[in-house]
Length: 138
Image 1 (tube, helix red, strand yellow):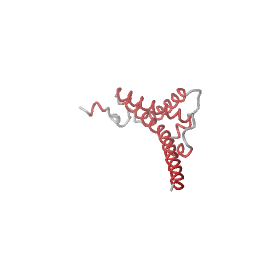
Image 2 (spheres, one colour):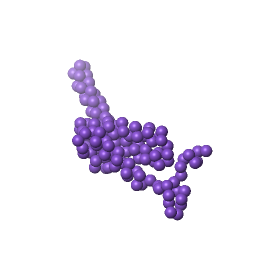
Image 3 (spheres, one colour):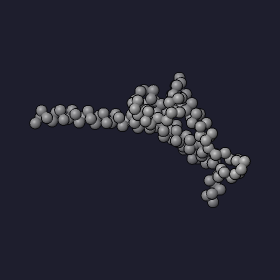
Image 4 (tube, one colour):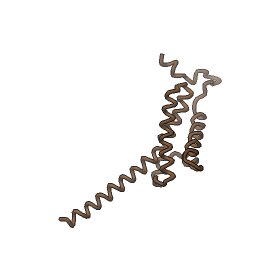
């Protein structure tokens, strides 16, 4: 009986450890997507003059990106998780002398991208294309 139990315990321990490591790698890779989404929404909150939401979203993105960059620099993210879950814009900007420098470059790149793809407040044909939510909530 003990001859079967010991190998099963070793197998189960290895299986759960591997699964945990994989899920940790995946969750760390997904932090980059969370940060990108939060920072894109930060720009939209700024354009709609929602200051408190802008600050909250910036902090969410900042904390997620700090954790992601730290994990990436420590090589804690598996290649397959990186390819599956890290946005391309993040991969292009992952160079710099420090974590904070990289996080700053990433925010700047994501903010520029979000700003360019967002609707403008003045449109030549439809001047009310951009709707401030404070006008619709009252």
